[in-house]
Length: 380
Ligand code: UDP
Image (cartoon, rainbow, N blue to C red; front, side):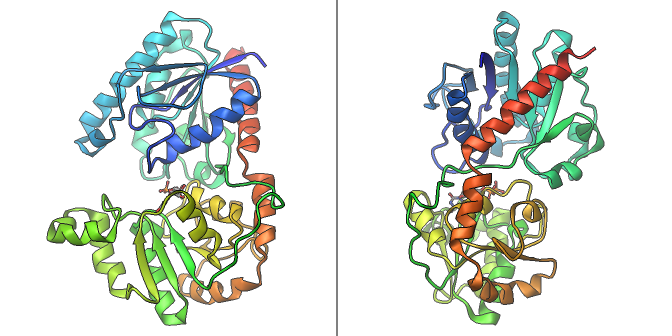
């Protein structure tokens, strides 16, 4: 296939990211598979990115993540400086067939503003959009700029202006999704795990309370705001309370964390993260927000761990109730479901992940969307 795609990762983190970095991880998972399918990739990110591609361009030498904590107008200023570099490149050359953009709001608006001379563009939505209709209320790319979601439920909740420009959704994938025969399933322990940012939307307070009431061991893994280790949070003392996620942890979660039945282990990464999830009997998601894409959900399936979750956001699309997990709309029932989930088969979870959530599946679906976006851009 002779297709050249400018992949706009934005100015925040290098690709692949050094640690946390959801969007940058998606790009690092997608690009090698696109190149295997013959797509040429020009990566627009920062100077420290190491992902192998045909070409790179950057405005900033390294990731501007720290600037994301600044006031919103400064955040937009950094994003816009990066986008101006992308636009200059697009105006200078004619060999870019399509832009695949991942820079929320600013990327989409800038590409739309390029007018009829700009290339066809696909913007991937990465967030729960229902709360920010104003950011997307005036999208007009003259039929040239399209969006895709990371789940059907995310799109269904999106503002109308976005849905009118949508070409569908592509579920998130994980490189952990491999043929179940190739890697043996580790021994299962007794614990349930909640993997993710500690945040009211992810519902660690509910999980911790139910673990104590119903009586199952629970490991909470993930950062509390900027604090990656329990020692760091403890050392911050009262200053930590300035961060809303730290306040949530200290007030709502910590009272149930006894270091025995319920533990918080901080951020886990690499083999330690995979072992923790693969050896868990259940991956628990007591969600209070409408989870848009759920990377940690597909990772759990890929590691052979059934999912117990509130039926919110993309969960009913990713989980087959009774086969790869158990879902409920009643959060009080989650504790009993953790116990009931022991009848679900790890091998089933891995088979489903290996057929639905591999990087190769994701890349094939994106190539189809690229073709659709290019067709729509040239349609009379
Ligand atoms: N993650 C991790 N270590 C942790 C907690 C989370 O590596 O301690 C990873 C997790 O494996 C997943 C990502 O962070 O790849 C979270 O993505 P998800 O879509 O589940 O949640 P988000 O934070 O984007 O809402």
